[in-house]
Length: 308
Image (cartoon, rainbow, N blue to C red; front, top):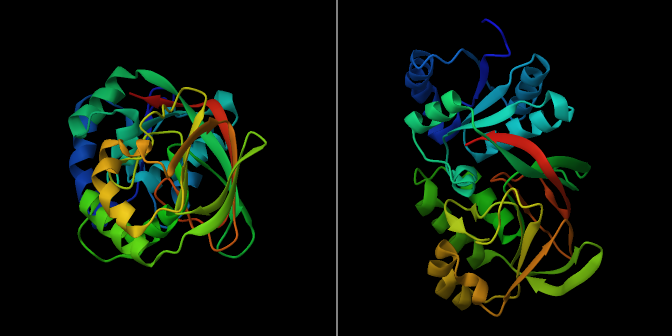
């Protein structure tokens, strides 16, 4: 395929966007190559494939790895890149497809195929923080992985479960809004302890605890309006023992980012966060549900390069 130092590797998840990404890629492949970008492609078949393929691509010397899929695919590709020594890590590029699309929102990336191709041609890079985190996997064993946008312990994890297990064809904002309302209607707030940089900052019932590197999650919810993915700090929001009536009244605000003035929304900043719960604490990690709390998250400044 030519010199790997000049080529880019595309990791495509054909199951994303209700299994329409395979057809999308037929057009995208031609557009990328017609623009003069040397391209090699590989397809995922199972969860976790994108991590392995991205790591292999970095070891083979590709300077850029494109994820073609949703936020979960982006997370897997980023995890593969972060498995590599810093000097071997390729830059991450976005061809966003899927339900949420929150990572490109948080990065301020212009949507669409033409914009994605322009980023590949321009090769302008931005340093991006990442977060190393640990949790409990589905089998009960300790699990470690990275996230690059947002992790959420509590209701957000339940919402992600609903969205990812739903056969409802409504995606994006509408699908997540339905999941937020239906999830909260049955979710019981859990007593938690939140520790930031070694200091306990909150103990009590909570609907959810958000650890934010970027601003958006849940299909366009501006949950952490002050978060910047390259500022060397995490924004932590504790949504305390909010009632169902409060949630319904705050729905318009969370999409605009104006909910942070609510007295039961507590905002902190730090570089290392622990969230422990007395009951089940489902986790949302970049739009996926890999396990449950307790959650331990630690910032990794300037860990990734992303094309913007």
